[in-house]
Length: 119
Image 1: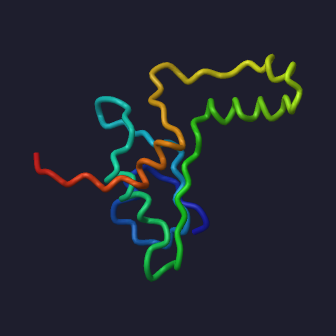
Image 2: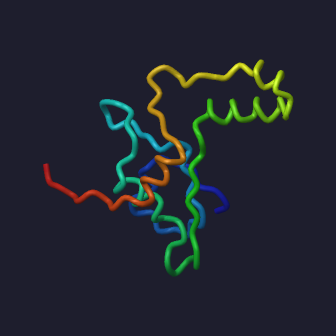
Image 3: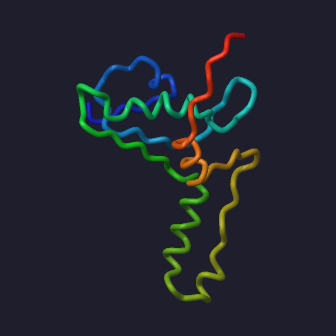
């Protein structure tokens, strides 16, 4: 398969060769609210990339939030003209949006997974 799309359940027990994992968000709905992924959840999903026996390397990529991408496109379209850049109307994050950024991604990469606890 060239591409597999799915939820975070793909991070549990999928034993297929996956070279690259793309996170379209670093958040999830946990049944009560949208929250940032925990380090354990992130590592479980990211760990699907470059599995031993299938690949020698794996890649993990996080996409920026949609409004951030749209704002960057608008600024790029304005070019180097300061007048055009000032006129760019920046999109706001949707109401209730739980923000994530490159620093969130870096923090998740560097964080040790939280210990498992029974409930």
